[in-house]
Image (cartoon, rainbow, N blue to C red):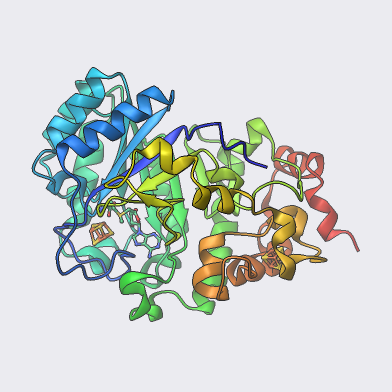
Length: 366
Ligand SMILES: C[S@@+](CC[C@H](N)C(=O)[O-])C[C@H]1O[C@@H](n2cnc3c(N)ncnc32)[C@H](O)[C@@H]1O
Ligand code: SF4
Ligand code: SF4
């Protein structure tokens, strides 16, 4: 159970819905009159992050760097000693500007989107080259540089090769996600089908094998199927009373409209910062009801042999793909079905021990 009095460590702020790209998978979709938070609104949010003892302000969009006052926002955060993680498409600034932001300590972490070897097919000609140059420019600065990838049909089969490229870029972390079916993905569903999911899990198996063989310093998160952090810290053992989105428990999202929700993926609204302060929303009835959910509330997962490993999957996928927040996450069901064959044999002894320690291997016992 999440303690409502414990404030979020991470506040994800979508400062604008404006964007200079039109990615076919973008969950924001077509926004006719893009919303935008004002500098005073973002300043107040950053102050609240500071007052709550928060760890990070995550600044995103749309494209963060299209907000006319993005620099002032970073300066406010720096003055308040709040670290900023910025999510960017990497084509909005010149590489040397990204470099300077990292070097000046205005950004503690830059997350660049790079959607595989067919990135240009998805995001537009020349965009991959621009992102690679931006990442190289930030190497050696004090900032953490991370690559975010969405697994989409054009790139899935080449993800193992792409892993090598990301490794050579020298980033500290590579995160891969499956696309959830919101915004433009609703009409571009052919970009990620059931077959693509199966192919992605196979590609993950090949990546896990390389990762286990070479033990690079880069952290790796493959859509929750493989999390290298768990090599060091282990997994949380299934607790039926814990929240089904345990990993997001210390986060909240403020959208460019002022609406406050849980994570960027789940379209639920607890209130608006245009009506009341963030802290009031976080302890309000609407969020409290959401926090009262537990793994035990997932009636359709009861009795599933994969529950110790899957822990109910993702509530956003359950919402979009399963038809409701308390339903099964059909993607996680499909991944679990393939896990024993495509992932398990590729895990090294330490990861297997971590799974054993958390009781997660029980689902593979005959
Ligand atoms: C909405 S974008 C905003 C930041 C910036 N414009 C960018 O593209 O990185 C934040 C992240 O969400 C990812 N994303 C967009 N649509 C998605 C979807 N349907 N499912 C999962 N992730 C998605 C993007 O690839 C990006 O990594
Ligand atoms: S994913 Fe990012 S860059 Fe692409 S359209 Fe959406 S907000 Fe813009
Ligand atoms: S595999 Fe499917 S049914 Fe089983 S716990 Fe995961 S989401 Fe629920």
